Image 1 (cartoon, one colour):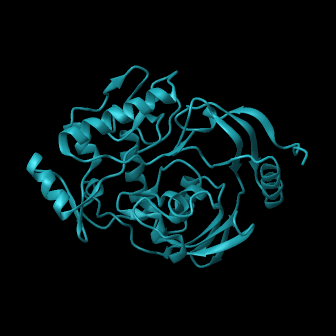
Image 2: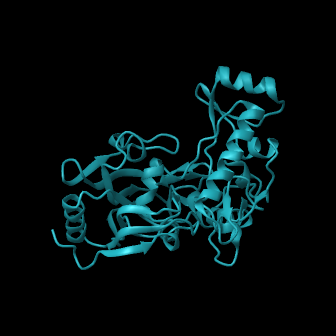
Image 3: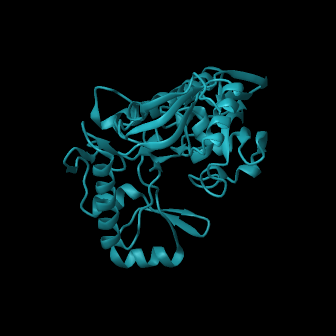
Length: 340
């Protein structure tokens, strides 16, 4: 099959990621409509090319060697109200703009997810969560292209297999589906969520959705988690490590190593803040290793200080993992998607 005209060759992927790291893709295309997607997939199949599906690049770590296949940036746009606060949103819509849209319409359910970079299509993959909310609580269905069945399908909430920072899209069915749109069910005139400690410090009575959004944006800015091209502390993939969920026995073993460990009971497990483990293991905010570092504002964010390589970032990641494991016996798991 002849290469479609809209597919480019040897395109640098670093500018398409928040970290600004990574090599070039052998082939690359922006995809805004279904026909282009199908044509690109057909080309990849005839050329036996691996596929890399890109969104906003906010949770992506690409190897310095780049990607030898076809990288597709999924960019369909549109917000379509179905009824009341049930809306279908195209995968290419900027996530925070959609959150602002919901708050402006007084639709509750995702207000504490304000300020998170990336596109709507990426949110069900990681089951994005922050400050007491997870996106899965409002997702009704996901429309995606099934690369096995070779057709578009609608996946119900149950079929998405949501768990903490997980879904079938990044676990059991990884690389099978290409998210095209997401249908959300919000709460009309619903009350805002504010039970997370960082928010409880700011309010004494029930805040509005607008007040919670403003507070979350302020908190995230103070932690360097709102993108600012002039601030290297925001040149990160967000929270780089997941908060460990430990069994009763694992948590007991951890207690033998340290006292006064902050934790949050969750069913038969205990969630422990990864940021606390990192700092207590000797990696404070601002810890620097050449051209990469831990953010000066947020212990979970690894940043590119400028001119770094992905190899440097991975080395820092492993240094932190090894240090935390040696001190506490807990191996931190990274959140981003790694390519190459």
